[in-house]
Every structure is written in C-alpha cells, then in structure tokens.
Length: 226
Image 1 (tube, rainbow, N blue to C red):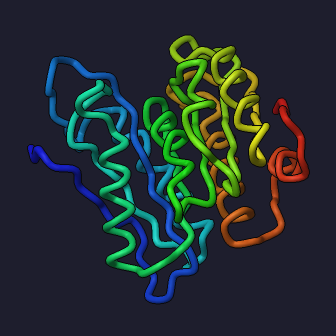
Image 2: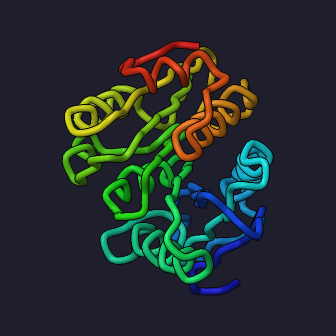
C-alpha cells in the first residue's frame, strides 16, 4: 500500500464545469496505519461517487481521494490530503468550482476545508465532528449540507447540530435528518446518496433541485426531516 495520498478518477469529462472530491472516513486501527482501497469505509464511498458522476451528466469531474493515513491525529490529518488533492485538481482542470463530499471523518475534513478558495459546496454525510468545529473555518460563500441519520450511534447528532448552527451564522448551511438512517448509510442508502448528488448538482451547476429537502435547504431552511 502507498504511503502517499492518491486521487482516483471516477468520471473525467473533457470539458467539465465543476469538480467533486469524494472523501472517505475510517478510524485509525494503529498509529500510522495506511489506507487500503479495500477497507469498508473506502468502499462505501464508491457508489456515492458513481451517483455523483451520473447526476453530473458529463459536466462534473469526479474523483475519490484515498488518504495517506487512516484516522485523524494532530500530526497527520486528512486536511493536508484534501489540500494536496485540490492542488491536483487545479493542475488537471484549471480553476473550477469544487464540491467536497465526505463521510464520517471525511465529512469533518470536508467541513473544515470549506474555507479553501475553490471550494463552493460541501456535503457532510454522517459527519464525525467536534462541537466547536463550526468556529474553526471561515466558510463564507460556501453552500453546506449535512445529512445525518436519526439512528446514528457513531456520529453525535447534537454535535453536528452545533457545528451547522455556527456555520449558518456565516454562510448558507442546513441539516437533513434521515429517519432510520445509521452511520454506515446502508439503511436508506438511496436517500443519503440522492441528497448528496442533488445538492451538489443544484448548488455547483445551478440546476433546479429534484429533492424537496434540498430545495428547502437552498431556500434557507436550517433543518429538514425526511
């Protein structure tokens, strides 16, 4: 396994209007543990990335990021990998608006990268966050969606609510609560993936949203239940 971050193309149209970077989760098993392309937290984002590519209809360059290390610590956080990947997107596609779509710790990385200049859209799926994460970034101009399952026993809904409340003071941000959804996003899988794809295409490509929940969030709602 490589010790460096890797960027895996999912859909790369010749003339993209925007780019999407898909970020996996996964807690560290041991200090310095490497990321395997076959670990469940990585594989879970494969259908999410494919759904985004289909929804983009040839206008979105979609990539999956494999982090350099598992988990998150003060020395090797996924934020450095996100910055590296954004540099790679710039080299490959020039200046394009970028959406970050992350799950669990990848959702946290997406939220904390909302202040990067090219990032215009963030979707955090079942994000594992600290309650004060919303004060650690300047998200001005970025449209942000968090999607959280009502039965998630890994990521704390209360902390997600606090983060989104803080972000809403400075930008457009909202939370969709998926009834019966769990952390792995297997139950009600289509709802999690559909909300992510619809929000990205509506916010990044300026398309009318198909999902009522997405329409409500983009119209200013703070929280919607589905």
